[in-house]
Image 1: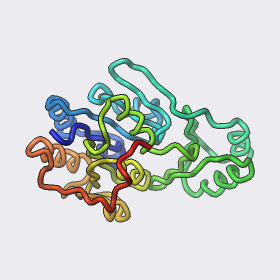
Image 2 (image 1 turned 30 degrees about the vertical axis):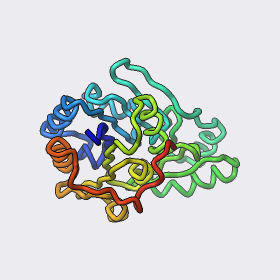
Image 3 (image 1 turned 135 degrees about the horizontal axis):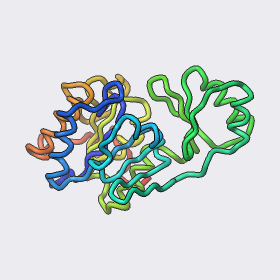
Length: 237
């Protein structure tokens, strides 16, 4: 078995309007039963994800907050991979009436609030960056991405990234897909993502992930050759 892990985004990839259908859930169960590992890699905060998705047990690990947090369902343990946001940053945004959601590390809002967020980062001299996701705006330390979160999980699993299939749909998925042995975009993915992956599914969202899983189970994607041009060097982030 070449591909031992499926790493998947949530919104717009597994889920449509926040929900995962039963056919997709069944495909995830069958992939787990084949001996492969499942990792979710999402920009959502864990508390937010738990309100709409009650099947955490299907995953070996959930990388949340765009790489800042790892949750392990089997032990119900949460590990932060980055420090909490500076209070001065939150205070500055509050004074400008910028509505934000604050997780363990992530500070999330929506367009066009990125202008206020970037200005605050600049004025405070913070080494943070802003990540976009179909209208969502996420601020995180500069060294935190979905790729670094996935790398932490793969180190724990002791599985090299070349044995990972990654699937996503949006801007913030570029980083972790480049680090996977095989990168996939669902049919509804942004054109910029589709242009930089090894495989595009025929179906959208959960149906696309189910299609991908069926191919993994059928022949371990032996008929797909990764394009080294779309991948970062396969090393840990």
